[in-house]
Picture 1 (cartoon, rainbow, N blue to C red):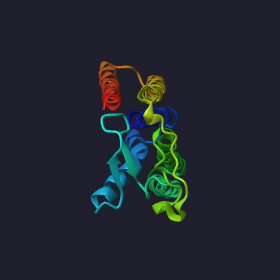
Picture 2: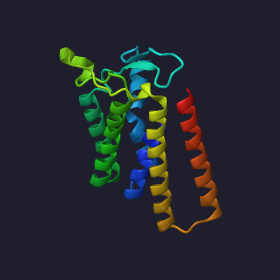
Picture 3: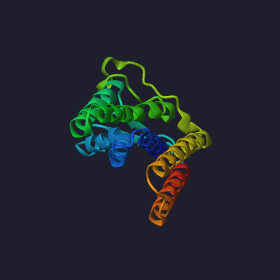
Picture 4: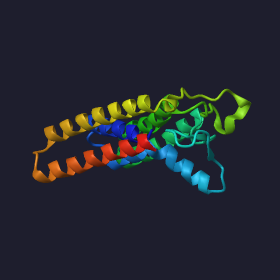
Length: 187
């Protein structure tokens, strides 16, 4: 799931216009950003192909960033920064958006999400495995994208006059999101 996270950020932006859109977009991917840093820092986290050529083909070993406790801690960290920068409400919103990544990943991931960092206690791994059904995952991402885009553009239209520049910018954004969804489903 990639585009679905961004659809959620657009929906939140519609409800929270004072929170910068870029910070919401980054919040939706913050767990993955930290995952990449830990992956590049000597393989602290990793992934392996389990079903090459399919949607969600990798079994992710994100024992820290994508553990339930790790996601909560990273959400608090990002939310704390947002609160310091834009106020308590924005910080709370941003922290919740970061955590939404884990919730959405729970729906699509195979059972590879630990409860505790490093899978301490060797507890069962979580994941409902929606990635095993590419069409269902595509539908879910499409729904999140459409709802987010509609809510976002509706809120923008209510706050500012519509100009040609806004229409072109919105059209380019919508086209990029749709292309991203298509690439996401086909890869």
